[in-house]
Length: 480
Image (cartoon, rainbow, N blue to C red; front, side, top):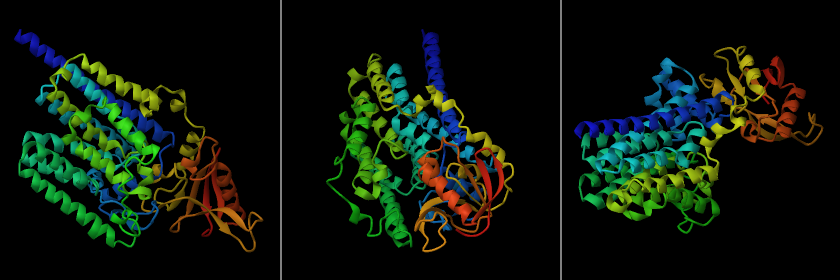
């Protein structure tokens, strides 16, 4: 009997391991193929340049973001890229970050499994919760949406919650430190996690964690960001002035987020409201800031990734508390919601089954061929979807579309022409005019893009140097 039980447990562990590895492989393929097809963009270019600069022990001064020639900490307090930079000694390429992101989110399942084993969750239910977690729409969209510090923070939060519950103080402090230094607003989540754990256990150690969470958050937003010349993170009139306390469910996007998030786990988090508190806080700090955070109030992009870990722990506590839920047949209920909502939302994992995902855009080979002729350390401005592939250099700039007024000598024979701008003094411009690229890749309509490019040529701003099909390398003659 003992031998049979041990064999069963070993098989169960192997099955869990294969599930985690399977998701890692799926997410790695999803993000690498996307990048190789030149579908990644601005965000990946920014963090890859940061990481490359850190790997060479240089100050991370961004040239690709909205505010060029500003330090990385003007945008976010993301120390994670310092910690990851040694990987660029082995492979200095944006794909190193892509692979690390897929690995980290997969590893976040380990403390989750240990947590479920501690609370004696049925093996079938454990496996169902694991699949629901790793397939959560917030994780899928974050993996698809380039590389972001929130994904790494999710892993650190998973370990933080596990060790906090286990009572391992030094391990808790370690992952607490890693979590809050990954991105500035994670301190809100560590505060609320510690608060909910204090309510549950009454352990005073949680009060200490709450104090340091609040102190870090206050220092980040009210001492650091509030006193920077660029106030994008707090708004021109300050952080608190943007609060809209009536705005939690005031539009369809927010209501969809709440429905998808709770529904993904079969609405089980509602059974343990104390442990739901961090998830509500996560949504609140995006939802209550109104127009300041509009792009972060939908089911898309990377902003919902932390909800995965914040919702799955209430699910586990609910299953542990209500024994009738901890039955193998209940696994079907959990899996149904995850699979149904994946199908309903056409989330990124479904792309692996689509022909368009595997079909290489016509411009890819042209760009790859052209990049061989770009001098290694040359200063260059490039199209949004090309920039991540050449971001491992000190001077790489974004090709920003705009319009420009010409009182005389108009290249388009109109008062206002489609035009482009860029920072710095790049030597070269790289573009590809393949018809597959859309507004996400070009940052404007294809018509305006081609028109603006033609205007630059007419005005003598750029001169063709090398061309392969639709991909062209221009020599920059003068500033636009």
